[in-house]
Length: 327
Image (cartoon, rainbow, N blue to C red; front, side, top):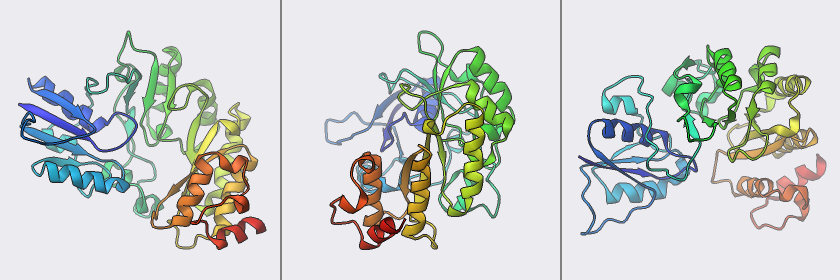
């Protein structure tokens, strides 16, 4: 069987497609990975096509790929299809991956744990995150040794755990990281609201890095305005244990809370900048052009050199300027 695996979006290798690729290769099939596609009479006919999208804003590309391959099996968090790889292959707990479609990617990538501690019926995370419904409460799935590809690959791990310290075996994983002298990117973030002195001290003992592994970086989030106190309690706890706030990048969800105002957005933003935390606005309602404008101003780093009232964009709203001036 010839398998075609199409990755619609995402900078990192697509774990679902890598898992499917590994399973098919282990069954004697051939696997071809693609990020772009063009179907014509000279195409090699695939016996099975998989399409994966992780972002909802990739709908146009997703629809184009589905039109080109109407027989494809489609999945991912950026699609309305909620099936899992395990359901497709008929095996539970499958944690094996094929890297052959990503020859330029030298790090090792994977999950030490699945699930999230916020997977409760009343959790606000369910409004914008699929993990609570898809994976449930946290559980361990891999050791560090099982995730690393081994020599000659570098000791650099991109762990995709949604809640690293929610892993019942996080202490064992930290010990393995330290003993193996691994550099680790916790790209999905740690929940600073749920840190305690033990876990904060553990963070300081590991070689945490950004996605490029070229600077110290921890990822976290401050999504809800009402979490200010508990958020900065975690920030202070990390700082006491040797992790300076300037090492933090905080995702800030905007355009989701019905009670949100520009005053509240600026309050969160200014408080983080004052502590040298790097803000990363995540726009939930992408029809809000003013929020997309704010996101661009922040992510390009222009906020450091151009005041908001001097930033000339047609999509900037007068309300945002008035709130900025009052902040």
